[in-house]
Image (cartoon, rainbow, N blue to C red; front, top):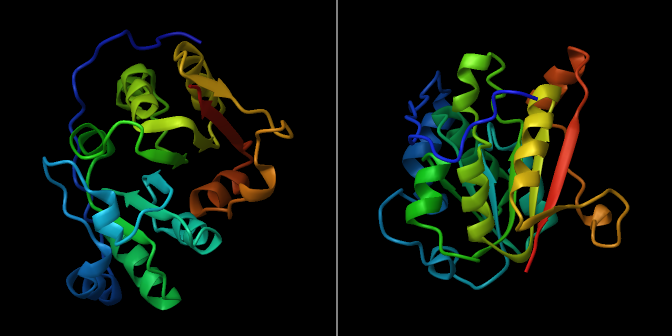
Length: 230
């Protein structure tokens, strides 16, 4: 693989994606504030945000929220935070939380890097999931990919030792990119399927809309999981 980024880069600019919202999504954004956290510059008190102390998971770019809702149902004993910049997706997640009566999820409409730098403390996350991020397939756009050396180092800092990073993509060149970048970070070790610490029985995930589209196009799905080392 060529054209890997170097050790430093300028922070990327994010454009908030508003999109076309349904009436229900608009209502959710207005009325379901109990499920939302506002971005800011002060560190989050996660126990206060959720009203309890519990293992904490983070999904970055949750899309329309299907996988995050399934995770919340699977892990009612966990506190889950979702980050997304697509406003209709935030509204869809809030509607799902209301429909299912889930209380263990909070959503934030914000860019992941900003929140991780300013509002998430070191070693405060037990798991991070990033499913089907934009692969930015053109070479000149590779600098826009979320998975970069600095971002992976930031994730390692925010995950506790023993915590899990779970990535998924349907774009093989991006899977190779992710694998090579993760191999550079000494605080992560790959988790092989079926390994003693793989947690396979507890790590099933539903098929996302993006995954279904990739399968229709004949793409191979790759799940990449890494354990944060002590």
